[in-house]
Image 1 (tube, rainbow, N blue to C red):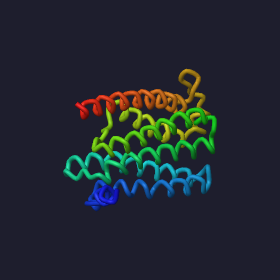
Image 2: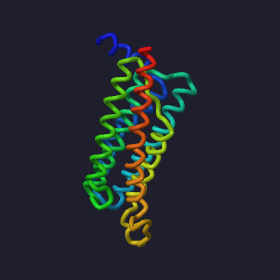
Image 3: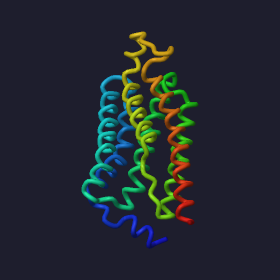
Length: 200
């Protein structure tokens, strides 16, 4: 166990991992700024913090592969930071504007992310890294888009623009929930295939 922990924190200090650490640090910053004032300039500041965290999410994995700096730390904490940031933003928005992010959607997404996290850690203990697939990446993009649009929900509500009776941010959220469940099924199927292949 000690050797595994030591290996996890070996060669931590590189650009991709620093970006991951920055995203983790931005999570409590986002919460503090978001609840500083639900409306007005502080909401814009929270939007900026979330956008900055999303940008680090775009670049850390790409740089790790390009610079050949993939580490056990990044394998574990990169997806962890993604999931915690997204769920935190969802809960914050649901607490302020429950009609945008209903708790049913929050519970589904949070449960999916917890299952994914537990599964990822289990696979990592078997020396198997489960990488993102196109369904998971698409779900993450829709998560970010729906959360970014949620900051403009009052304007979207006032415009009376609806798609299937929903404002764009709400519609994107439910599309995200469907994609997240589909991604979970794809990840689970891939993990089962991988474990069976290792046994053989």
